[in-house]
Image 1: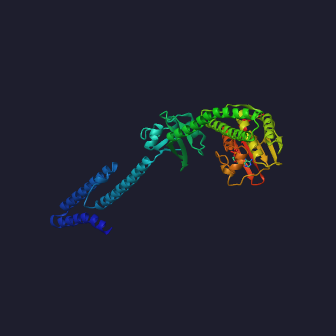
Image 2: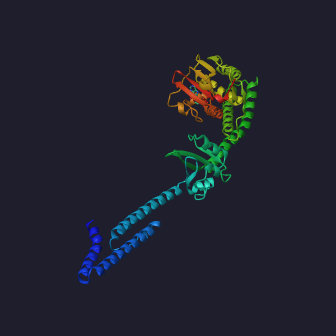
Image 3: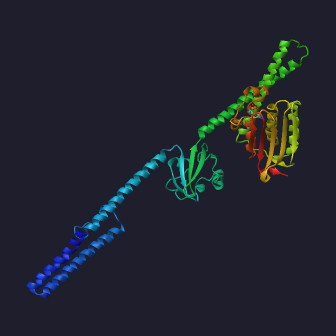
Length: 432
Ligand code: ADP
């Protein structure tokens, strides 16, 4: 501060001293003239510096800050320092941003940042490929305007991001994308796309393979089964050994037939092109016939009752529902010891939903197994499942059918006490 006053006063004081000296030698007029001119010159000089500052501030350039060694030195030096610091910070942020950009570019997934109205704010190169975006040209554009597939538009509109969207044939017809949306900040979204074309191809191959193998096995099995049955029916066949062998062959062939049939059913259900053929399903009527089949399977070993608490019909597919209900009833029979009770029930659930349930007093399932029961070939007791003619695919089939009807499967069970398997159908499928 002292330095500033020293520099600020030195010039006027010098003028004053020189003017006083001139006054004493040449008189008042020349001294006053000199004083006036010198002050005017100083004023013009300051105005010039102010002008330079004003001019510079119009388009500030850190490399081009005005310079001075006099009174303005402090101002310009500080300005210079400030500008240098700003430049360094800007360079630091630019480097950090560049690094983030490089990292996101190297991500094996496409990333798009969307604002609260789904406008593109930024995207990485992979997202450009996936959605055919241009990271410069398309900034500010609505994403649904650029990627217009109806499923994608609906996915964003419904805003239920719990499960990823599988999008087929985006830009290139072959491409299959798995799209996830992660909301963050204030109404912002991160759209993450993953190319699952290869995975899908393998999955299709697996499905086709199972379907083809099952199909190929079915014909020879039917033939073998036919011959075994014919031989079993032959009255002349009195060799005990041969009869036992035939019975065994018959059992195994039927088991394989059951397995092949279940595999075919599963692959049909998994086929994405196979949409649900909707019709009006008279569930009470269907259940009466399922109860009869269950009783035939039980062969009088269980007490089986049907409780029809509702006459409601269902919008769905009769054959698929017959398979799902039948599987659950057959399980109840197979996993309930002789003398046990089985109750089949059809009734209203909350908010117009409908519920089918099968309750048994059978062997039950320990809690750790329950979440895995619908996996293919998952069995709590393999030998019991086999003995009773199980394939390990029944609940997997039920799960598929239930999801094709937008319902859900509920399993309540206690080991040694019995189980209740229920299917809840949404109200939109409820028909009076
Ligand atoms: P499986 O052909 O073996 O019965 P499922 O897929 O129908 O195949 O059922 C899977 C497993 O779930 C069965 O092996 C059995 O351990 C268990 N399970 C299914 N239903 C019942 C039930 N009502 N009571 C007890 N366990 C059951």
